[in-house]
Image 1: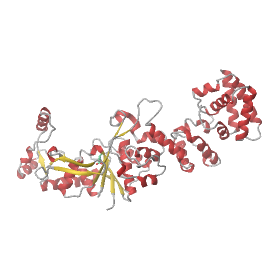
Image 2: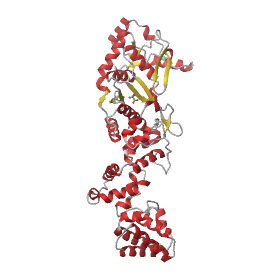
Image 3: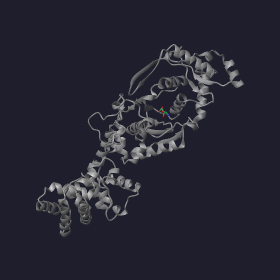
Length: 494
Ligand code: GLU
């Protein structure tokens, strides 16, 4: 059997972490099994679906590198098939028209509430004869179509979920549910089943919020004589207070776009999402390339426990789950530099900060500078923020760095004399930049550390970074000299 899976988002909002993770798992499963990954946009809710949302979903998937083999199919284009299926269910006696008014149903709901039981339609219209039902429909009485739950034939409806195991629901617990609205539009459970059947989906992998609908869908499959697919539901992702993550509650940080805009590497972001509910079975968490994860992916290691998106609003230290940052940092650090560079370039281009020389005459310099500074960075944004001084003459000096520059009045002399000594150097090598600085500190009777910290602050605007002498080398003699001169002025100006 060829595996066929699908991602079936409703285009009613942004592509968020939960949806993106579902897409990713489906894609991994398809690729692992040499199967097909189908993309279906479930846009039948005309009021809530927007083209903008569809475009956002497609963009997000493209950015993540999750490519699909078929589609995008648009559910709304298959309306007639959904209606035909409803007619077939009517014909089979597996569905019936319900003419009950809103008032009647409200009354039943109120009674159920008063009796503290779950509402279940009282089946008044099931008693209508076929002729009467047809006559009322012909007369133009508004009606919905309800699925007739086969409580005369079976006690339970069950399925084996690949993640949640055997699931069985008493048939009596399920009320006759609506499959076609009074405006003639089929509802999710029907449309979804018809589409999955037509698309020959073998495995339905989706969020655990779909679990509640599955028994109803299984009943529809059975009524139509169709084979049910394998179901595999993905546990939910919650915030630290156990609330479902949502844009309304958490803001942009739950959208894929946020990660794109904050300098995440697409595959590193996928790596983070993969870990929200899946583990490789051993300690490995970082998968630098797709093939490696595809190879390891299996539904056996998808967890049925909810995962935690460890985002704390208003935490100035972390813009998102620290784990997302850590995974991205690991990719930044570990990727072969040639694989990383295109992403760094793309980031600079998007910020309008790219210089063509970095691809030409200064190619080597650019690559080695990125290589030098990447080990401490978490996102691509760090290259243009924390790393600005490496690439541009204008750069901010963070308050702590400014303090280091002015730490001791002796540093005025330190910066001045160091710049002169560097200017007098023949070459500019790791050895002579270091020894020059150390000799000068001895001369001034200060600890080398004081000067090193001051120089780092002066030339990078930061208090931490790679080995200072390597930093000086990558910046080059001229830039170092002029920055030291400026720093001397800063000290004297106080
Ligand atoms: N359109 C549904 C959703 O976005 C699809 C659920 C499913 O995959 O069956 O929730």
